[in-house]
Image 1: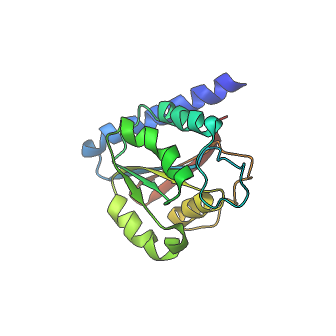
Image 2: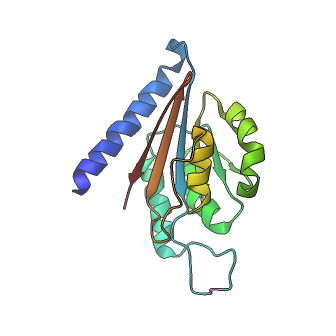
Image 3: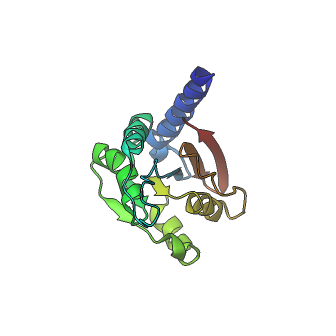
Length: 174
């Protein structure tokens, strides 16, 4: 069962990469967003508000970098928490990019600027179980996705915008 999902993911990622390469040939700009939740955090101290990733989470962050390895990102966004920045870091390093910090509490006020600033780009956004689907919904302009279950660190939301057409999907990679 893992192989069909993996093959599907590779196909979708290669299609997105192909559309990026042909961007100059197209009359419309292609914008592609990849949204993930942070990897597994250290829950050993329940009072810790800003925990780091645990070993399993560090491995997942590296796996995300491999899964997304054929995608050339233009910018990578993360909330300003250890767990989200640590999840984004391997992919940022692979793409030789700094991580741009965003405040998920300001999503309603930043969404228009975010969309304008990222138009025609390929973007990774790392957030949380509630902010990741909220961000996807804001890009879509509709409330389509609910919060991610706390035990799920493997959702990959892909939103592609070409002209006025928006295509979205969610994959679970575990």
